[in-house]
Image (cartoon, rainbow, N blue to C red):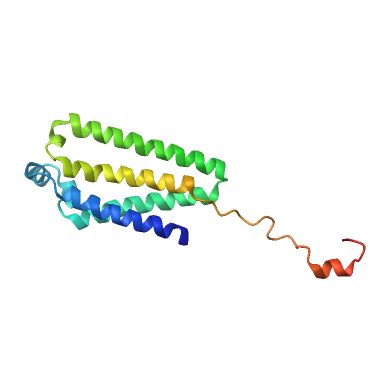
Amino acid sequence: MKRLLPLSVFLAVLSVIAGFLLSRMSFIGRVGISFFYKEYTFMKTWWKGTLVIFAALFLLMLLQDAVDRKLVKKRANSFQLLVLTAAVVGIYFTYRDFQYYYAHRWLKEKFHLGGYLFWIGWAAISLYFLFSRQDAPLANENLPTETADHLEEHPGTK
C-alpha cells in the first residue's frame, strides 16, 4: 500500500482542481443542470464534484493495482496499455462532445478543463503502473531452503 501513497496524493490534488473547475460552469450550464439534468447537480458544488471524481479515480487505481499485482509484468503492462488507450479515447470523445454538442459548448472552458482532468488522472494511473516496479513474489516460499547448518552436516556437499 505504501507504493500507492504518492499516486493517491496526486489523484486527490487533481480531483480538487477538477471539482473546482467543474463547479465554475457558466450560468446557462447551471440553469440547465438545475432544470433538465438534475443527476449532475453534484457538479455545482466543488467539494461534491471532487469527492465523485476522487472516488472514481481511486477505484480505478485499486482495480489497476490488483491487476498489476495478480498478473505477470508483461500481461499487466498489456492491460495498462489497454486502459491507457481507453483514457486517451475518452479524452478525445470528451473533446469532440464539448466542441460539437451545442449544449455542452455553453458550459465554457473551465468546466471542460475539469472534464479533461478526469481522463488525465486515469491516464496517469496507467502510466504510473507501467513505469513502476512490480514486487516480484518470492519463489517457492513453502519449500525448505538450504542453510549453512545443513551444509555442515554433510561435509561432502559443498
